[in-house]
Length: 312
Ligand SMILES: [Zn+2]
Ligand SMILES: [Zn+2]
Image (tube, rainbow, N blue to C red):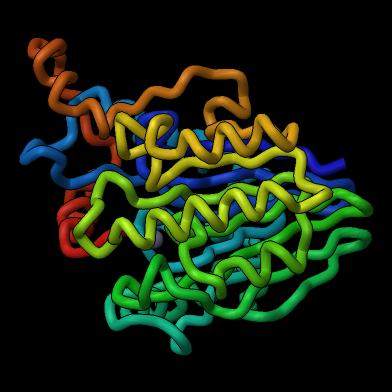
């Protein structure tokens, strides 16, 4: 049996899509990074967001300490954090290739990660289009696929974890599977639980078109037809939109028709969604007297500033 534990995501109030996965053979942490939007509606992060980021990062670090394997699907700062290398200590690192199918900014970060922390992990493997067996558990990776509708923001690898007849698949940032090449790996792996970052509806018209959204919803509905799929977890980009549920109402209708479950990462744990970023303006209205949370990660604002330059 595969145990799936969502650790951090937009549905918990931070930018991330980190999971801890446990099988009989291995413990795997996927994408150990937590971040915040540098600016939404012209506003910097609210103190409640900073508090949540610090708590979620603590949780990710706790689970990282228990993990045998860390996966890094690409080099955006909501998916890995180069400021606390202790996380990589004595782990097997399965990472997106640092120099092939990669854009300039991610290439620089990957190069630094490897140069600075080469001696910390027990083993480092470039994972693109490969598989790794650990006892009865197989970790398989897709070839590099575009980070969204095109490669402006770079490439990612998708990852599946299979044990016996169970398979969990992690899409990474494919922005709602809006291209056919995002679909190939998912369709061939036939997961029973699929995590998919949803479409980028909060940036419609800015690198993500209405056609992309139509394609994304059509593809997600196609994935719901996979016979083995039982649960679809949607989060990340989609949950930056306060109207996220309405944007994908066709997906909910389809899921109901075919008897599949659709949840967010928070919903997977039975929790209500807490969309702090999408509601940032209201947070500042309603919590004007909120004390500033001490920044435990002093470098975070520097990282957040860099995020201004690109989608993640
Ligand atoms: Zn991301
Ligand atoms: Zn990304």
